[in-house]
Image (cartoon, rainbow, N blue to C red; front, side):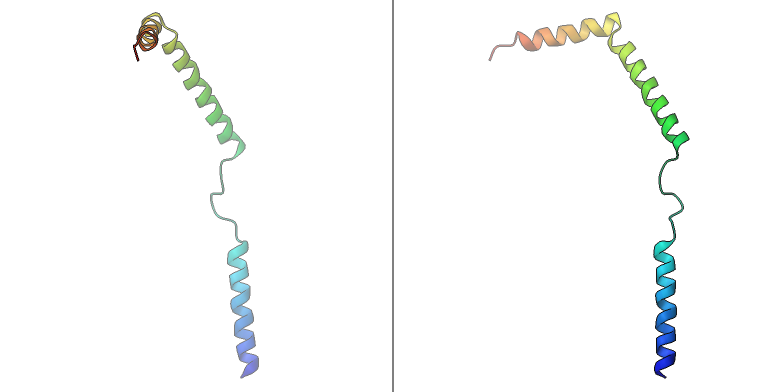
Amino acid sequence: MNGKLNAKLKEALVRLRERCLRRPRDTGMVTSEYAMGIIAAVGFALLLYEVVTSGQVRAELQAIVKKALSARM
């Protein structure tokens, strides 16, 4: 009886160990996904830079800053 219990316990421990050591299916991004993410981020940054430095937006931002700096406290 004790031998059967030990065998079942050993079998359960082996299955638990296998489950713990098994790698998850999706552990993170691969190098190509990192590269695509960086390219997308750089593209978005360039687009944002172009929008912010355009004449209309620049004038609006300067007006906001001037108004904020000239406010009385």
